[in-house]
Image 1: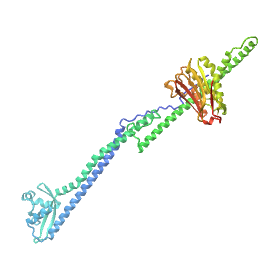
Image 2 (image 1 turned 45 degrees about the vertical axis):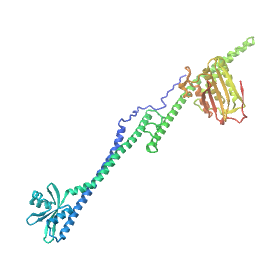
Image 3 (image 1 turned 135 degrees about the vertical axis):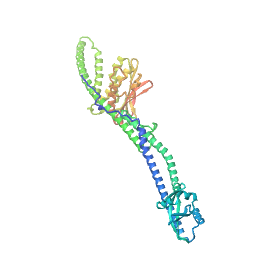
Image 4 (image 1 turned 30 degrees about the vertical axis):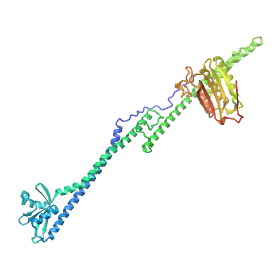
Length: 493
């Protein structure tokens, strides 16, 4: 027999580049979020301040021009002679300086400015600056306006409005906006840094989780306790839920693929083993039948047949049950379910296991119910119970006890096999039902796989537990397999 098994078909092997999270991911994400926001804030503040400054300058210039026009209008309409006291009064009222200008001689007359200031600028320079509209006198800049007074004596008056007043008005208009902008930046920048930091931390947690999934760690979930992975109802929270669902689904798919591949390989192995074993059993039966006929002929002449032949036949019956169980793996059942007696089924298992228990030094007890029938496949259920009993005999060891129990629990039919052994090793208790998993050095891990497959074939389950120092394996079949019968009574054999 040559059975070739491989797991290469479970997952395609590809030379994929491993997922390597970038070390600068968080800083890069924070930078990408912070710089645009802070840049927009600064641009908005600068635009607001610039617009306010421009508006303040325009308003100040307009106010200056309006003031000059009003003063000009007042001087034009005035019939009062412009004396120095009058000019000083106008200077105090308006804040501008006044110079009487003689256009014919290009020289100044009365002035609200000091004599030293006027000597410093000179008439020639003053005449040149009238055309430009601006002049600097004594370190102070002025805007020049020309008004022709139509008083008692028509005169030309130069109105010098200080530029510093325009700058002051502009500053007074701008600084509240600038102060609000600075305060806004002082509050928003730390808030933006904190918010983007939290977002980048949460996204970083998702990145690490996806990295674990990429490395094949399926089935894990991103919990609230993990840093930055708080469960929120926003887009990131829904992304976390989606990634968790993906991880769980991938884990289930991988488990399903592995289980399917193992089942396929198990079916191949079972078919190979069963074919070889069936041939061996057939040959052994033929040899025993031939030997039994010879022993019978010898008995007729005064000798008794050898009882060991009966034991050998029973051992072959046990082996044949195991072969039937192996043939049932990975194949659709051929025999239709039929009504069978639970008591008769357990009695058959007891009779098959009796010689094996006697040889192994294990005491057998049977708790057989009466009047319980169920619908199922007789040979499959018997093969499953035989496998459980064989495991129980090996686990109990010499001096131990094996117990076969049948009964009902509500609407379910129960077949239990108990042994006084130490139970499965701790390392395989979670995977004990899987094929090729065994705690026995010489075992191949197919007995429980056969029993589980038969139980699931009937819509039931195979469970195990430790009770009072004993190990109990139970095949539980659903109510659909239970026939309508009176309440059960029990008898012990």
